[in-house]
Image 1 (cartoon, helix red, strand yellow):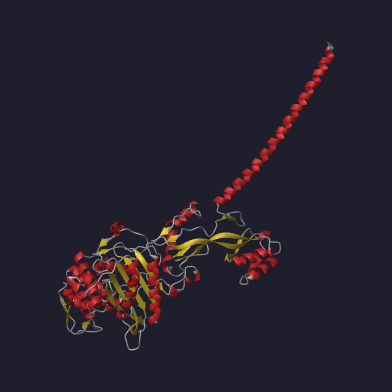
Image 2 (image 1 turned 90 degrees about the vertical axis):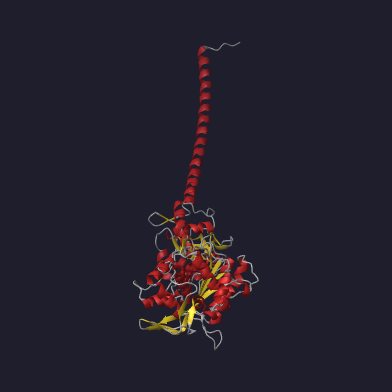
Length: 575
């Protein structure tokens, strides 16, 4: 065994320790470099993740030239569906063309290339916009796939496309006035679309909850099948009678739900340029008109309900009613005393005028207020018209003319809503375009007539279709009742002899009413030479056509209707 000297041993030990130290330091440096690389990638991916989160929360927001965020346009909206779940409005994806001017290399070249695809662009304005240092601007909203492909092929730096939501209405104009429309940013500007925004959607969007798939469908009380039937009948009637316009409304008399409502000419909600066309306004809610003799139903109701008249009373219609220098005539006068049922079925202006004079103007004002005729009707639709009513105190001549629907103008929907109370037992139910049960309806309803008064009116309505001016509204198998209204239009401050606005207010089945139907037709011409153009000859057949089509859809089964089996009250009236 060799024993090393102490000095040599120490040198060997130091050499070994130095080698071990160098090896340890190398490992530490390698480990540090690995940790540094890992930390770098972690920071990088963390930054990317944070940026993605910001972009997701901001819904692809863009910055303007000042660095502040501009909220994304074309937000998502809920589907609108009818009472049966049929889609009336939905969002689809579309592309919008945008530019980032500060990335544009040659504004002149970019302008010419873009104009080759979009000739309608203002080249001078576009050139100025592309020459700025702004971060973002829209060039064209809602471009077609073909246009998008053409722009892609041009390959212009700083030009891109943004996928947005666009509203689509599968039915086109079928329910245009109910649905309304949206603007290019997918914001409601009319109809139910505007109601959705103002009632809840704007708040949801502001809170960040209006995600692509997070909105429940918005259900309406409207039945798309009924809506289509109403509109078709109106369009056909306009062509048949060469009319200027027409309105049709169907309401559930037990709930106040609007099951269908159309006003033609209308607009296709997909074409927002038509929305502001004055000739396409919603005459059902915005238009206020003299509704003519349909008001005789309300006058008869207030007289019977107040006790001013009984069903057995008679009124002198032997000669014109002279009042305040005016003479009130009947269109087809009987020139004799008439019972209350006869005043109704012969649509006597004289008899109705004497009836309201007996009741008095104060009582008339009270009941007209109950029926909702003296204030603007508010529903979910933002479009509504205020009634035109004589100033108080009402004169006797104003009271008499209003009794048969002249001198007071209300919207068709106001007339329909008031008409519901005539046949549903005397309860006024505010109309709605949203689903509502009978129990919910009773919570917002108010009694305006006694139940027995409503019973009288149901029999009078039915009697008028059996033996009066409403014969052309009859439908085989259904007990239809109703009242005609032929109102002369005011032209240059005077009532015209040849321009009319006709209406028919109806209900069915009258033994147990479920639905009310109102039609209005503006300036109809005679169907054939030599015949008239009164409501009984055009508005009544329109109601018949609508009921014939919608009754099976609504589950109203036909009955074998025999006039000899009509309610005893109606037969007593006939005698």
